[in-house]
Length: 191
Image (cartoon, rainbow, N blue to C red; front, side, top):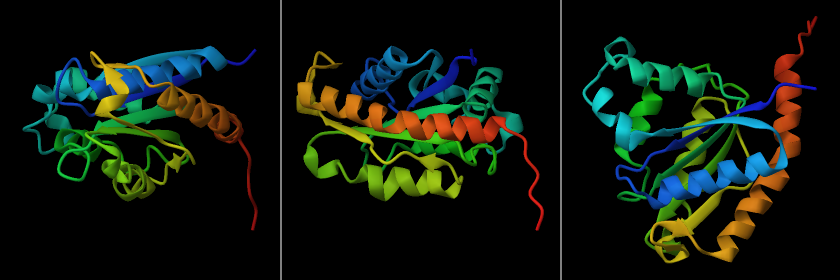
């Protein structure tokens, strides 16, 4: 039996409670219903004071360094941000500014976002996917976007979004498992 999948969720929301955090938790739970996982949720809202003013990684608080190490060692990242001025939040981006440039190469990343309406859904393709492309991460084909109207009391209430979560996780698991096999095998290529 292989070890549980190390899944790290990152919510870029600046508030708690948060619709974005609820969406990331829903995705983590869906992954956990399908395979054995060890999951951790990192919330920018609580970590922000520990890195907001830092210019270098050696200036971040110890709990932020721990979060960065969790991100860099994940088998799967589930990242989400609310849409803020047509992009992800600044603190979400600032957190990833401290991640090692090559530490996410090949890491599967499931993208998620929340916003006021459906007009913001392209954040997945135009903001989040390029960010993780920079890291050479493996952004998974299906992301999940949810609007304010998909929540009741900051809890996901939309069966359509829940179906998209299920579909995104279901279609991603074979890719995640393949990436895990590739990263765990040692092979030598000769040219």
